[in-house]
Amino acid sequence: MKRDNRILMIVNEFPPTGESGVQRPLKFLKYLDRAGWECWIVTPRKPTKNVLDQSLCEDIPPNAHIIRTHNWGLTASATDLVADIRAKTATKKSPAKRLMWKAIKLVNDILFPVDKQIGWTPFALLASIRVIRKQKIRNVYITGFPFSALLMGIPLKRIFGNRIFWVADYRDAWQFEPLFESNVLPFRSHIIRKCDDLVLRTCDRILFVTEYTKARYQKHFAWIKEKAEVITNGFDDDDFAQVQPHKFDKFTFVYMGKIYGHKGNPIPLLRAIANANIMDFQYIHIGTIATEVLQEIESMKLPFFHFWGYKSHTEAINISAGADINVIVNNNDAESTRVFPGKIFELIKIGKPILAVGPPHGIVKDLMEQTQSGAYACIDDETAILDAIHWLRTDYHARTDSATIRAFSRRELTAKLIEVYHNGR
Image 1 (cartoon, rainbow, N blue to C red):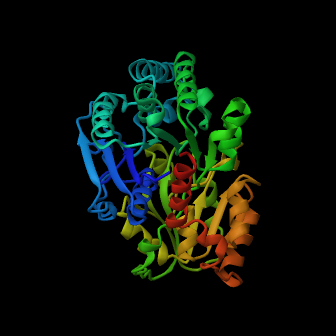
Image 2: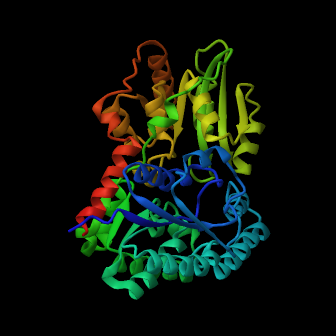
């Protein structure tokens, strides 16, 4: 059978929207185009986040057909407002503040039982139907977060049946996200589980970014085994072709990424670093951070900590390439044993020593050992952190071109996606 190398990609977070969630579908698009595929992309006309990164637009292939639609979804901030309020109020002793959190959460869950981008789906669905009919497209790719985007696959499959082959790409774990049970009210969790079940039953293939997420879904939905695949996140070699490492005037730790109040809290690490035997150093965070975490760090009056805010993808890579040690932070909890931070593969490619902290064991620790990219320590073990820093400064030697590392290139990962579609014919 002749291979139909045309694809419709339904993507909510797309340049010039910034942050890490944009990277995966954008790089798939880039390397699908290079592999000779003709690509149509349905995406919102207005950026869905207030964090913008125009440099990401350079990766959009000139041959790609970009269809930007109206959107009644709400523009998201770098850190979720409701989660931010929760972190500020939920742990307070004041009954009034706890009641305020519950009220805000109730209103949020009633108005947005799936997510705040649900208002985009009618426009995107109509545009997708038109494209599929006009271009006679068979291959369909939909990615979430936001997970409301995945819901569009259900009516598309009912309308077109086996004339389309729909791949649902789970960049996150939806109903198995960290703290899902404690943060989502029962009526909303019931809606989400019903929606998730419909997506799983309707799609032709399911992509997960880790083996753990795949295994967790298969434990609850054993029948998805035959159509579940893992394609991890990775790095794009092109992003490193002309790296110009930032020149620091002192020993520098760099953290690149997002920090929530409940995930990736760096405070235990910062306390340990404060006791490191380094004469003159600094710790720089580039990215976004929850307000309450930044306020707590500032209250600690650490002279070495500097928050530089969000930087373009190119700037962020240059800064990390100039670091003496790049940092990865996970919390010490059960969920964090199975989570890859979004930037870990790019940091591995950069080749500078990586200090990763988190739970005593987990997939980050396994990946660090597999790629020999740095040192790992439990975030609650200050002695282990200080020993790891000492080893990275004195004995570490990077390996940036091994076959293990090359397996995480975006080109190789896109080849796996192409194989999924070709095997589904």
